[in-house]
Length: 65
Image 1 (tube, rainbow, N blue to C red):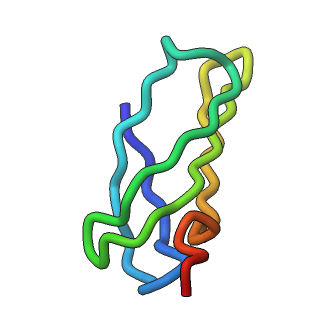
Image 2: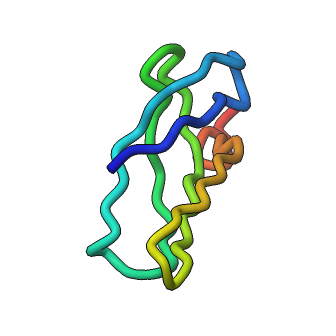
Image 3: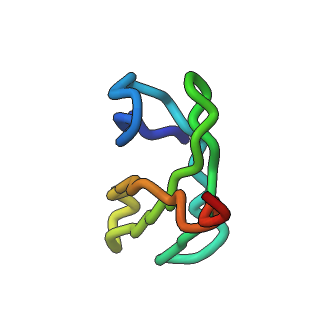
């Protein structure tokens, strides 16, 4: 199972793998496959198994600038 998202940094379309076995609501950090910047990925599943995937910029961890 996969989802298509758009990177909030570079704007590229990226296909990411989804794991419905990890719970109905998930949040995790994943790097863009194109520009390598970190996203906060949020995934929720409906009762019928439909996935809703959102990505947000997650550069909070780079606050040493």
